[in-house]
Amino acid sequence: SQQGEEDPQALSIQEGENATMNCSYKTSINNLQWYRQNSGRGLVHLILIRSNEREKHSGRLRVTLDTSKKSSSLLITASRAADTASYFCATEPMEYGNKLVFGAGTILRVKS
Amino acid sequence: DTGVSQNPRHKITKRGQNVTFRCDPISEHNRLYWYRQTLGQGPEFLTYFQNEAQLEKSRLLSDRFSAERPKGSFSTLEIQRTEQGDSAMYLCASSWTDGYTFGSGTRLTVV
View (cartoon, helix red, strand yellow):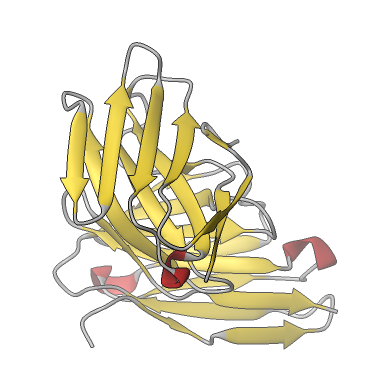
């Protein structure tokens, strides 16, 4: 079963705009990770945030984590057409140890 | 190439046939995972190895599925008597500490 839910399911924006995707999960976690997947391809690791962290940046990416609300958000600033992809949040649940539990993903389309 | 390598990239098979996929992880990574992803969904955990030991298997992994990781290096995932419901992308990932590196996947189509 999948632990996380991403919101929205799909997002369409113009190049240059910011894109925000949200993720909610159900159980206590060790960390939360965001991945990108281009159509029909493997997953690319974007960023990892630990349960004791609240915010993390990597280039144009900003991730926040609110463990009290069991939610995270991924912000992509100044989006580009090349950012078009599916984005998944994945949690490493504290109960299960070493494995990732994924949400269903957000499909992002950036129009040029 | 120091990434996770999966072969084949695509496999089309007739229902009832057996198929085997291979994953070559990053050599320093002691943990190896198999996930399955169907269209429009996120990947679902199938099984996990630490070195050569298979430490966990999902209930999704029916008795038609078997995975091995001899000598703690590459891994194989075999599906016996394939069914149309087995059609999916099969993803392999390896890990050392926190980070996971995924391969490009094997897309299985059962006709």
